[in-house]
Image (cartoon, rainbow, N blue to C red; front, side, top):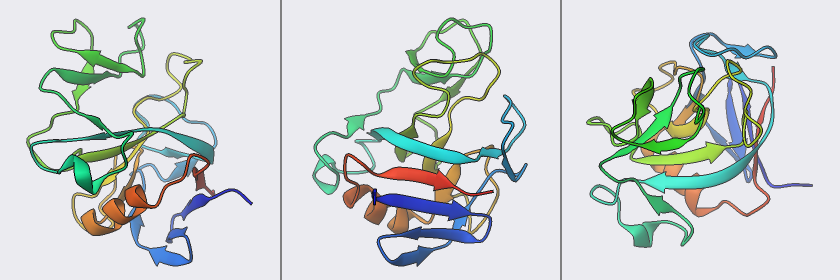
Amino acid sequence: MRDAIEVSRWGARFRGHRLPCAIGRGGITRTKREGDGATPVGSHRIVGMLYRPDRLPAAALPGWAQPIGPRDLWSDDVSDPAYNSRVQAPHGFSHELLRRPDPLYDLILLTDWNFPDTVPGKGSAIFVHRWRKPRHPTAGCVAFAPDDLLWIARNLTPDTRLIVRG
């Protein structure tokens, strides 16, 4: 069986550990749409890892983790040809800052939700990241306590999937 981070509204399980997590404020959905605040059901590949090098040492992460630079953004504008992808400032479309002033995006696991064959409006920036506070809802991502997220990041394999159950 594939290595998996299994998520439901009650929490997560990874490598025999049960971990509290947060999901989207819109719950879990089978019909994800941009801005609905819901976490999409499915088996999502982990396709990348981003981190803040000014807050987290590279040595703490797998070698394939990529640093977040000061101009890094994520497009969430359905009219943007680069919708649901990493872009650079200045960017003339709606976007999220990847280098946030708070610690939520200090470490991000990128999923393949609506990627690489992006459908405008089907949802963007479905990440695994640090939670704001225990179980505080996200905008559609899955979020963990900082220490749990770092442990997950260190224990990923190339086959690890994020499995979200409805």
